[in-house]
Length: 351
Image (cartoon, rainbow, N blue to C red):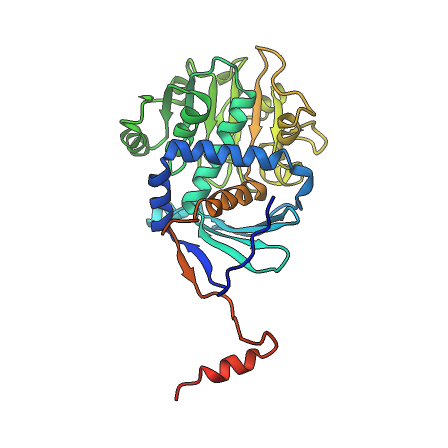
């Protein structure tokens, strides 16, 4: 991959929330979801080139603040992200994020971007990429359990990447379900609001769980899940927060992003530390098997990983050229003589 050098004036492109919305509408949300899935797949197939570490987390009773860094030796990326479930009650977003991409050769940033919207898109693109890899070939119906901020993105990604035609919605809050159904209107999906999780799962070959409570929870019980389905469990993303009954995990073939992180934060924190899991990059590169039998339950225990954010930032940066979807940000000191930083400061003194 080509290294990205800083501009002559050391101005860093900054993609604001408004710019990100313009980019999404310019590209088209389904086309962007397909593009992000392709970028993530490309980078997962280069998995061994990347620095990998569990995200650096600062936990509090109210939520978590995390840094997610990685590098492939040419580009470095990180994301700042929080997760505060109680924020919704206060009229705030549960998750907010921003990210940075830098040139390893110089250390100079080449992109600063909002990542609240971009994280929703890359999370959905990752779910759909994995579902395309693991779900039954004829999967056309998804149950979306949890109809908050992620639900529409997840639904549209499954349509764009996997060919899903029907989404069955359930949330303990019927207002959230109504919101999701309203937002998905006109996007070419059959949308079915349901009164219970059991009803939503009926006839679904793909089940996605995405709830926000920071607690051990049982969104799906063992008797609710039949054979031959694929489960995307994306709501569990920190210690003490889960969505699935342990018995479901015992019956499933489990796939993860990075075991060292997922065993701390994912559904598998409920299992023994040596419970076998398969890393999804191994399936994408042909080094491990995915779905091997029609009756098999495949489970993607997704907590989000830094390489996905790197892929999303790389995707955005590559599409900025020739557009006006960014501000040139005066982020870096750029003295005429790189040894004379103080001189630059002195010359800026007001007369």
